[in-house]
Length: 320
Image: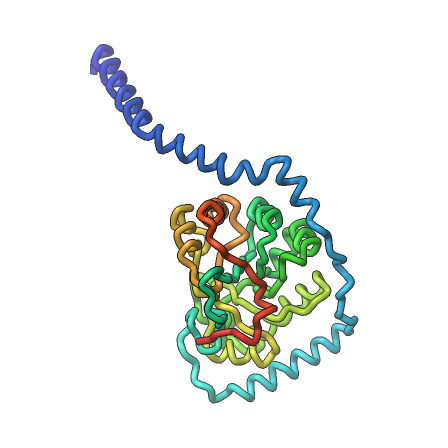
């Protein structure tokens, strides 16, 4: 190839790239405008100041936990494992799924034509923290049930303190010790191996519950397994431990993988009494922006929607 041919080829390539950028520029500009409109504005200095003014609640006033020596805790858990193992030793085990018998997936509310009630739940799994989503919820006083793993609690103490400071908005529930599917035979989902025995199931649930109680001063009422998968025996055993297994009826972000417009449409399509599942542990996802876009559209169209805490409606749960 001669120098002249090389220069001509480079010029043609440059011209093609310029045309492609010109074609994409309206889309890129629109995306930037959406970011500024839905994200930057609510998180401005004014937003930060108003969010901080939300009345704080005494973190430890409701502390119910009493000190129990570890040897006593270990003895109690061993007895629980023995009892549950005996109770379910002949029970048939069905495939792991998100629709196992006993999983709560909706709240049965009286019909309401004027204003729908939704239940927002966020999973704080293992890795990251979407602090801007958290602040948006505080700023707009959106009641939320947050399911936390032990590993997430240990990784984000400042975020946990923010949840406790605004516990009039948030309820903190149990997402497990190691974020594993709830099983008694080791079912695997998304390459995550579930608990493979009753002993492992009890440890996954009870250690997670103990850490939540130590952190918040209140025992959790609800449990959601890592990946939200469970088998029927595990769900029944978790009920015997004293917790309700919470699923969902709207998967708003599919593990924080969906684009913003899909998240937005799923939020807008949620029906009265739906339990919405989103994720708090991925600041790089578009979950936050999709949720904010949905909220802002509902405000613009004067759509009446209330977000409620699950704890206030335990007598109205609908399970599979």
